[in-house]
Image (cartoon, rainbow, N blue to C red; front, side, top):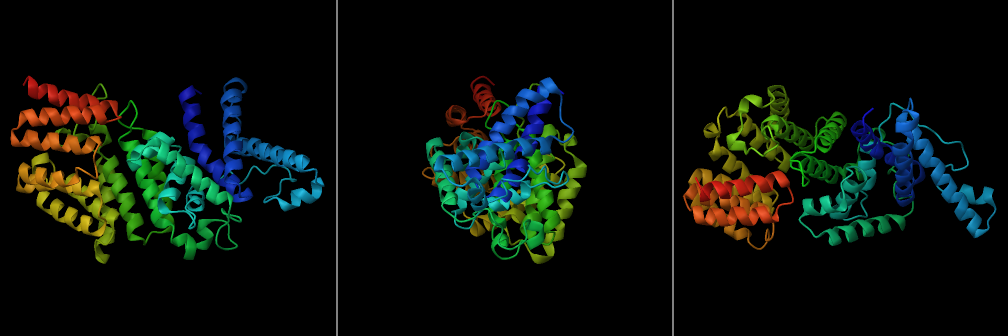
Length: 419
Protein backbone atom coordinates (compact mmCIF):
# COMPACT_ATOMS: atom_id res chain seq x y z
CA UNK A 1 0.00 0.00 0.00
CA UNK A 2 1.53 3.36 -0.97
CA UNK A 3 2.36 5.86 1.77
CA UNK A 4 -0.49 8.12 0.68
CA UNK A 5 -2.97 5.30 1.27
CA UNK A 6 -1.47 4.71 4.70
CA UNK A 7 -1.86 8.38 5.54
CA UNK A 8 -5.45 8.41 4.28
CA UNK A 9 -6.31 5.29 6.28
CA UNK A 10 -4.83 6.66 9.50
CA UNK A 11 -6.63 9.96 8.96
CA UNK A 12 -9.91 8.11 8.54
CA UNK A 13 -9.40 5.87 11.55
CA UNK A 14 -8.02 8.47 13.98
CA UNK A 15 -11.35 10.09 14.99
CA UNK A 16 -13.04 6.68 15.19
CA UNK A 17 -10.40 5.39 17.60
CA UNK A 18 -10.39 8.62 19.61
CA UNK A 19 -14.18 8.45 19.88
CA UNK A 20 -13.96 4.91 21.23
CA UNK A 21 -11.30 5.83 23.78
CA UNK A 22 -13.01 8.91 25.19
CA UNK A 23 -16.37 7.13 25.29
CA UNK A 24 -14.87 4.30 27.32
CA UNK A 25 -12.43 6.12 29.57
CA UNK A 26 -13.61 9.72 29.68
CA UNK A 27 -10.13 11.31 29.64
CA UNK A 28 -9.74 13.37 26.49
CA UNK A 29 -6.12 14.41 26.98
CA UNK A 30 -4.95 10.89 27.85
CA UNK A 31 -6.91 9.45 24.93
CA UNK A 32 -5.32 11.95 22.53
CA UNK A 33 -1.82 11.09 23.78
CA UNK A 34 -2.50 7.37 23.48
CA UNK A 35 -3.92 7.78 19.99
CA UNK A 36 -0.85 9.72 18.81
CA UNK A 37 1.46 6.96 20.05
CA UNK A 38 -0.68 4.33 18.33
CA UNK A 39 -0.65 6.28 15.05
CA UNK A 40 3.12 6.67 15.26
CA UNK A 41 3.52 2.94 15.89
CA UNK A 42 1.26 2.14 12.92
CA UNK A 43 3.13 4.51 10.60
CA UNK A 44 6.38 2.80 11.62
CA UNK A 45 5.33 -0.84 11.74
CA UNK A 46 2.68 -1.35 9.09
CA UNK A 47 4.81 -0.53 6.03
CA UNK A 48 7.48 -3.01 7.24
CA UNK A 49 5.34 -5.76 8.81
CA UNK A 50 2.23 -5.56 6.65
CA UNK A 51 -1.19 -4.18 7.42
CA UNK A 52 -3.29 -5.90 10.12
CA UNK A 53 -6.59 -7.51 9.22
CA UNK A 54 -8.39 -5.10 11.53
CA UNK A 55 -6.47 -1.76 11.43
CA UNK A 56 -9.01 0.00 13.63
CA UNK A 57 -8.85 -2.75 16.24
CA UNK A 58 -5.05 -2.69 16.12
CA UNK A 59 -4.99 1.04 16.86
CA UNK A 60 -7.52 0.69 19.69
CA UNK A 61 -5.51 -2.14 21.23
CA UNK A 62 -2.20 -0.24 21.14
CA UNK A 63 -3.80 2.97 22.44
CA UNK A 64 -5.59 1.14 25.26
CA UNK A 65 -2.36 -0.50 26.34
CA UNK A 66 -0.74 2.92 26.45
CA UNK A 67 -3.60 4.18 28.62
CA UNK A 68 -3.23 1.19 30.93
CA UNK A 69 0.51 1.81 31.26
CA UNK A 70 -0.15 5.48 32.07
CA UNK A 71 -2.65 4.64 34.80
CA UNK A 72 -0.39 1.98 36.30
CA UNK A 73 2.50 4.45 36.36
CA UNK A 74 0.28 6.98 38.13
CA UNK A 75 -0.78 4.32 40.61
CA UNK A 76 2.84 3.46 41.34
CA UNK A 77 3.72 7.12 41.78
CA UNK A 78 1.02 7.57 44.35
CA UNK A 79 2.04 4.37 46.09
CA UNK A 80 -1.49 3.06 46.30
CA UNK A 81 -2.89 -0.42 46.32
CA UNK A 82 -3.06 -1.24 42.59
CA UNK A 83 -6.31 -3.11 42.65
CA UNK A 84 -8.09 -0.38 44.64
CA UNK A 85 -6.73 2.41 42.51
CA UNK A 86 -7.70 0.79 39.24
CA UNK A 87 -11.30 0.49 40.40
CA UNK A 88 -11.37 4.28 40.90
CA UNK A 89 -10.30 5.06 37.34
CA UNK A 90 -13.02 5.50 34.66
CA UNK A 91 -13.04 2.50 32.36
CA UNK A 92 -11.86 -1.03 33.04
CA UNK A 93 -8.10 -0.63 32.77
CA UNK A 94 -7.48 -3.98 34.38
CA UNK A 95 -9.22 -5.91 31.63
CA UNK A 96 -7.71 -7.13 28.38
CA UNK A 97 -7.84 -4.50 25.63
CA UNK A 98 -11.16 -4.56 23.80
CA UNK A 99 -10.85 -4.27 20.02
CA UNK A 100 -14.41 -3.02 19.81
CA UNK A 101 -17.11 -3.75 17.29
CA UNK A 102 -15.41 -3.56 13.86
CA UNK A 103 -18.69 -2.40 12.33
CA UNK A 104 -19.15 0.50 14.71
CA UNK A 105 -17.94 4.02 13.87
CA UNK A 106 -17.58 6.29 16.89
CA UNK A 107 -16.69 9.38 14.85
CA UNK A 108 -20.19 10.86 14.97
CA UNK A 109 -20.42 10.01 18.65
CA UNK A 110 -17.19 11.92 19.22
CA UNK A 111 -18.76 14.97 17.58
CA UNK A 112 -21.51 15.04 20.17
CA UNK A 113 -19.19 14.20 23.03
CA UNK A 114 -16.92 17.15 22.17
CA UNK A 115 -19.85 19.56 21.92
CA UNK A 116 -20.29 19.54 25.70
CA UNK A 117 -22.83 22.08 27.02
CA UNK A 118 -20.32 23.45 29.55
CA UNK A 119 -18.15 24.65 26.69
CA UNK A 120 -18.92 27.79 24.75
CA UNK A 121 -20.04 27.06 21.17
CA UNK A 122 -16.80 28.52 19.81
CA UNK A 123 -14.67 26.34 22.11
CA UNK A 124 -16.68 23.21 21.34
CA UNK A 125 -16.38 23.77 17.61
CA UNK A 126 -12.64 24.40 17.81
CA UNK A 127 -12.06 21.30 19.95
CA UNK A 128 -14.11 19.12 17.64
CA UNK A 129 -12.34 20.39 14.54
CA UNK A 130 -9.06 19.47 16.20
CA UNK A 131 -10.16 16.05 17.49
CA UNK A 132 -12.46 14.83 14.74
CA UNK A 133 -11.58 16.86 11.68
CA UNK A 134 -7.85 16.52 12.13
CA UNK A 135 -7.30 20.19 11.31
CA UNK A 136 -4.23 21.92 12.67
CA UNK A 137 -4.56 24.84 15.05
CA UNK A 138 -3.47 27.16 12.23
CA UNK A 139 -6.18 25.82 9.89
CA UNK A 140 -8.84 26.24 12.57
CA UNK A 141 -7.66 29.78 13.29
CA UNK A 142 -7.99 30.71 9.62
CA UNK A 143 -11.49 29.23 9.52
CA UNK A 144 -12.48 31.45 12.45
CA UNK A 145 -10.54 34.49 11.14
CA UNK A 146 -8.51 34.55 14.38
CA UNK A 147 -4.78 34.60 15.20
CA UNK A 148 -3.27 31.15 15.68
CA UNK A 149 -2.17 31.96 19.24
CA UNK A 150 -5.72 32.91 20.19
CA UNK A 151 -7.08 29.67 18.79
CA UNK A 152 -4.41 27.61 20.57
CA UNK A 153 -5.43 29.21 23.86
CA UNK A 154 -9.10 28.51 23.13
CA UNK A 155 -8.46 24.81 22.50
CA UNK A 156 -6.25 24.53 25.59
CA UNK A 157 -8.92 26.15 27.77
CA UNK A 158 -11.55 23.79 26.37
CA UNK A 159 -9.44 20.77 27.30
CA UNK A 160 -8.81 22.15 30.79
CA UNK A 161 -12.51 22.84 31.23
CA UNK A 162 -13.38 19.28 30.33
CA UNK A 163 -10.66 17.93 32.59
CA UNK A 164 -12.33 19.68 35.54
CA UNK A 165 -15.71 18.07 34.92
CA UNK A 166 -16.93 14.75 36.23
CA UNK A 167 -17.24 12.25 33.37
CA UNK A 168 -17.37 15.02 30.73
CA UNK A 169 -17.70 12.56 27.86
CA UNK A 170 -20.48 10.54 29.40
CA UNK A 171 -23.74 10.66 27.38
CA UNK A 172 -26.74 12.26 29.13
CA UNK A 173 -28.46 8.92 29.70
CA UNK A 174 -27.62 5.28 30.33
CA UNK A 175 -27.25 4.73 26.60
CA UNK A 176 -23.79 5.13 25.15
CA UNK A 177 -24.53 6.21 21.59
CA UNK A 178 -26.32 9.14 19.99
CA UNK A 179 -28.52 6.62 18.19
CA UNK A 180 -29.74 5.17 21.48
CA UNK A 181 -30.73 8.51 23.01
CA UNK A 182 -32.28 9.67 19.72
CA UNK A 183 -30.58 13.04 20.21
CA UNK A 184 -33.13 14.14 22.76
CA UNK A 185 -32.60 16.66 25.53
CA UNK A 186 -28.98 17.63 26.11
CA UNK A 187 -27.52 15.91 23.05
CA UNK A 188 -30.29 17.21 20.80
CA UNK A 189 -29.24 20.73 21.78
CA UNK A 190 -25.74 20.03 20.45
CA UNK A 191 -26.85 19.48 16.86
CA UNK A 192 -26.27 23.12 15.91
CA UNK A 193 -22.63 23.00 16.99
CA UNK A 194 -22.13 19.69 15.17
CA UNK A 195 -23.56 21.17 11.96
CA UNK A 196 -21.25 24.17 12.25
CA UNK A 197 -18.24 21.89 12.66
CA UNK A 198 -19.22 19.82 9.63
CA UNK A 199 -19.63 22.99 7.59
CA UNK A 200 -16.20 24.30 8.60
CA UNK A 201 -14.50 20.98 7.89
CA UNK A 202 -16.08 20.88 4.44
CA UNK A 203 -15.15 24.50 3.79
CA UNK A 204 -11.51 23.80 4.64
CA UNK A 205 -11.63 20.77 2.36
CA UNK A 206 -13.40 22.57 -0.50
CA UNK A 207 -11.09 25.61 -0.47
CA UNK A 208 -7.99 24.55 1.39
CA UNK A 209 -5.57 26.99 2.97
CA UNK A 210 -2.71 24.76 1.80
CA UNK A 211 -0.80 24.46 -1.47
CA UNK A 212 -3.71 22.77 -3.28
CA UNK A 213 -7.14 24.28 -3.80
CA UNK A 214 -9.00 21.28 -2.41
CA UNK A 215 -8.41 18.70 0.30
CA UNK A 216 -10.61 15.87 -0.87
CA UNK A 217 -10.21 13.87 2.35
CA UNK A 218 -11.77 16.61 4.49
CA UNK A 219 -14.57 17.36 2.04
CA UNK A 220 -15.44 13.66 1.67
CA UNK A 221 -15.36 13.10 5.44
CA UNK A 222 -17.68 16.04 6.07
CA UNK A 223 -20.16 14.69 3.50
CA UNK A 224 -19.93 11.17 4.97
CA UNK A 225 -20.66 12.42 8.47
CA UNK A 226 -23.45 14.70 7.21
CA UNK A 227 -25.06 11.66 5.57
CA UNK A 228 -24.73 9.70 8.82
CA UNK A 229 -26.34 12.52 10.78
CA UNK A 230 -29.12 12.82 8.21
CA UNK A 231 -29.88 9.10 8.55
CA UNK A 232 -30.37 9.64 12.28
CA UNK A 233 -32.33 12.88 11.92
CA UNK A 234 -34.07 12.67 8.52
CA UNK A 235 -36.80 15.14 9.54
CA UNK A 236 -34.46 17.86 10.78
CA UNK A 237 -34.63 20.59 8.14
CA UNK A 238 -31.23 22.07 8.98
CA UNK A 239 -29.49 18.69 8.92
CA UNK A 240 -31.08 18.08 5.53
CA UNK A 241 -30.17 21.58 4.37
CA UNK A 242 -26.53 21.17 5.32
CA UNK A 243 -26.21 17.84 3.53
CA UNK A 244 -27.81 19.38 0.43
CA UNK A 245 -25.49 22.38 0.60
CA UNK A 246 -22.39 20.18 0.83
CA UNK A 247 -23.50 17.98 -2.07
CA UNK A 248 -24.43 20.89 -4.32
CA UNK A 249 -21.15 22.66 -3.61
CA UNK A 250 -19.10 19.49 -4.05
CA UNK A 251 -20.82 18.76 -7.37
CA UNK A 252 -18.69 21.52 -8.94
CA UNK A 253 -15.31 20.20 -7.84
CA UNK A 254 -14.23 18.82 -11.26
CA UNK A 255 -14.77 22.22 -12.88
CA UNK A 256 -13.07 24.33 -10.20
CA UNK A 257 -9.50 23.68 -11.31
CA UNK A 258 -7.71 23.60 -14.65
CA UNK A 259 -5.19 21.12 -15.97
CA UNK A 260 -2.43 22.58 -13.80
CA UNK A 261 -4.51 22.91 -10.64
CA UNK A 262 -5.28 26.56 -11.22
CA UNK A 263 -8.47 28.03 -9.78
CA UNK A 264 -11.40 28.57 -12.14
CA UNK A 265 -14.10 30.88 -10.70
CA UNK A 266 -17.75 29.92 -10.78
CA UNK A 267 -18.65 32.21 -13.69
CA UNK A 268 -15.95 30.69 -15.91
CA UNK A 269 -16.44 27.00 -15.10
CA UNK A 270 -17.39 24.42 -17.72
CA UNK A 271 -20.74 23.44 -16.28
CA UNK A 272 -20.78 20.24 -18.31
CA UNK A 273 -18.26 18.97 -15.77
CA UNK A 274 -20.62 19.48 -12.85
CA UNK A 275 -21.83 16.17 -11.40
CA UNK A 276 -25.49 16.00 -12.33
CA UNK A 277 -26.30 13.01 -10.10
CA UNK A 278 -24.96 14.86 -7.07
CA UNK A 279 -26.92 17.97 -8.05
CA UNK A 280 -30.11 15.92 -8.33
CA UNK A 281 -29.54 14.48 -4.85
CA UNK A 282 -29.00 17.96 -3.46
CA UNK A 283 -32.09 19.40 -5.14
CA UNK A 284 -34.21 16.53 -3.84
CA UNK A 285 -33.04 17.20 -0.30
CA UNK A 286 -33.79 20.92 -0.55
CA UNK A 287 -37.20 20.22 -2.05
CA UNK A 288 -38.00 17.90 0.87
CA UNK A 289 -37.53 20.79 3.35
CA UNK A 290 -39.67 23.33 1.47
CA UNK A 291 -43.09 22.41 2.94
CA UNK A 292 -41.90 23.72 6.31
CA UNK A 293 -40.50 26.92 4.79
CA UNK A 294 -36.94 28.17 4.64
CA UNK A 295 -36.36 28.59 8.36
CA UNK A 296 -32.66 27.85 8.82
CA UNK A 297 -29.34 29.23 7.53
CA UNK A 298 -28.23 25.96 5.93
CA UNK A 299 -31.57 25.54 4.18
CA UNK A 300 -31.27 29.02 2.71
CA UNK A 301 -27.67 28.51 1.59
CA UNK A 302 -28.70 25.21 0.00
CA UNK A 303 -31.52 27.01 -1.84
CA UNK A 304 -28.97 29.52 -3.16
CA UNK A 305 -26.78 26.63 -4.32
CA UNK A 306 -29.79 25.15 -6.14
CA UNK A 307 -30.26 28.37 -8.11
CA UNK A 308 -26.61 28.29 -9.18
CA UNK A 309 -26.91 24.60 -10.12
CA UNK A 310 -30.00 25.19 -12.22
CA UNK A 311 -28.33 27.85 -14.39
CA UNK A 312 -26.95 26.19 -17.52
CA UNK A 313 -24.81 29.28 -18.14
CA UNK A 314 -23.44 31.87 -15.74
CA UNK A 315 -25.51 34.58 -17.41
CA UNK A 316 -28.67 32.55 -16.75
CA UNK A 317 -28.22 32.75 -12.96
CA UNK A 318 -31.28 34.15 -11.19
CA UNK A 319 -29.42 36.76 -9.18
CA UNK A 320 -32.61 38.56 -8.15
CA UNK A 321 -33.87 35.49 -6.27
CA UNK A 322 -30.40 34.86 -4.87
CA UNK A 323 -30.34 38.44 -3.52
CA UNK A 324 -33.71 37.88 -1.83
CA UNK A 325 -32.36 34.73 -0.20
CA UNK A 326 -29.21 36.52 1.01
CA UNK A 327 -31.36 39.28 2.49
CA UNK A 328 -33.32 36.63 4.38
CA UNK A 329 -30.15 34.84 5.45
CA UNK A 330 -28.61 38.02 6.80
CA UNK A 331 -31.70 38.74 8.87
CA UNK A 332 -31.71 35.21 10.24
CA UNK A 333 -27.98 34.79 10.83
CA UNK A 334 -26.07 38.09 10.61
CA UNK A 335 -22.46 37.47 9.62
CA UNK A 336 -19.82 39.53 7.78
CA UNK A 337 -19.30 36.79 5.19
CA UNK A 338 -23.04 36.67 4.50
CA UNK A 339 -23.00 40.42 3.98
CA UNK A 340 -20.03 40.08 1.64
CA UNK A 341 -21.87 37.50 -0.45
CA UNK A 342 -24.91 39.77 -0.43
CA UNK A 343 -22.70 42.54 -1.77
CA UNK A 344 -21.82 40.37 -4.78
CA UNK A 345 -25.49 39.53 -5.39
CA UNK A 346 -26.38 43.21 -5.00
CA UNK A 347 -23.80 44.12 -7.64
CA UNK A 348 -25.20 41.55 -10.04
CA UNK A 349 -28.71 42.98 -9.64
CA UNK A 350 -28.17 46.71 -9.04
CA UNK A 351 -24.71 47.31 -10.45
CA UNK A 352 -21.13 47.16 -9.13
CA UNK A 353 -21.25 50.48 -7.28
CA UNK A 354 -24.14 49.27 -5.13
CA UNK A 355 -22.09 46.20 -4.26
CA UNK A 356 -19.02 48.29 -3.47
CA UNK A 357 -21.05 50.54 -1.18
CA UNK A 358 -22.24 47.50 0.78
CA UNK A 359 -18.76 46.00 0.91
CA UNK A 360 -17.47 49.26 2.38
CA UNK A 361 -19.50 48.58 5.52
CA UNK A 362 -17.27 45.55 6.20
CA UNK A 363 -13.95 47.40 6.46
CA UNK A 364 -13.77 46.89 10.22
CA UNK A 365 -15.21 43.38 10.58
CA UNK A 366 -13.24 41.82 7.69
CA UNK A 367 -10.13 43.96 7.91
CA UNK A 368 -7.04 41.97 7.01
CA UNK A 369 -8.86 39.15 5.24
CA UNK A 370 -8.31 38.47 1.57
CA UNK A 371 -11.94 37.80 0.65
CA UNK A 372 -13.08 41.39 1.12
CA UNK A 373 -10.30 42.67 -1.16
CA UNK A 374 -10.94 39.90 -3.69
CA UNK A 375 -14.60 40.90 -3.92
CA UNK A 376 -13.62 44.55 -4.23
CA UNK A 377 -11.28 43.65 -7.08
CA UNK A 378 -14.06 41.81 -8.88
CA UNK A 379 -16.55 44.64 -8.44
CA UNK A 380 -14.06 47.31 -9.49
CA UNK A 381 -13.29 45.23 -12.57
CA UNK A 382 -17.03 45.02 -13.32
CA UNK A 383 -17.20 48.80 -13.03
CA UNK A 384 -14.26 49.27 -15.43
CA UNK A 385 -12.00 50.76 -12.75
CA UNK A 386 -8.90 48.74 -13.61
CA UNK A 387 -6.53 50.69 -11.37
CA UNK A 388 -8.62 50.07 -8.25
CA UNK A 389 -9.21 46.45 -9.27
CA UNK A 390 -5.44 45.83 -9.63
CA UNK A 391 -4.80 47.32 -6.19
CA UNK A 392 -7.53 45.20 -4.60
CA UNK A 393 -6.48 41.97 -6.31
CA UNK A 394 -2.86 42.55 -5.30
CA UNK A 395 -3.84 43.22 -1.67
CA UNK A 396 -5.98 40.08 -1.61
CA UNK A 397 -3.15 37.99 -3.07
CA UNK A 398 -0.81 39.13 -0.30
CA UNK A 399 -3.32 38.09 2.37
CA UNK A 400 -4.53 34.70 1.22
CA UNK A 401 -2.91 31.50 2.52
CA UNK A 402 -4.08 29.50 -0.50
CA UNK A 403 -1.50 29.21 -3.26
CA UNK A 404 -4.08 28.61 -6.05
CA UNK A 405 -6.09 31.63 -4.91
CA UNK A 406 -2.93 33.74 -4.76
CA UNK A 407 -1.97 32.70 -8.28
CA UNK A 408 -5.45 33.46 -9.59
CA UNK A 409 -5.56 36.91 -7.98
CA UNK A 410 -2.12 37.84 -9.28
CA UNK A 411 -3.09 36.68 -12.76
CA UNK A 412 -6.23 38.83 -12.67
CA UNK A 413 -4.13 41.84 -11.71
CA UNK A 414 -1.57 41.05 -14.41
CA UNK A 415 -4.29 40.66 -17.04
CA UNK A 416 -5.68 44.09 -16.20
CA UNK A 417 -2.20 45.63 -16.43
CA UNK A 418 -1.56 43.98 -19.79
CA UNK A 419 -4.86 42.98 -21.42
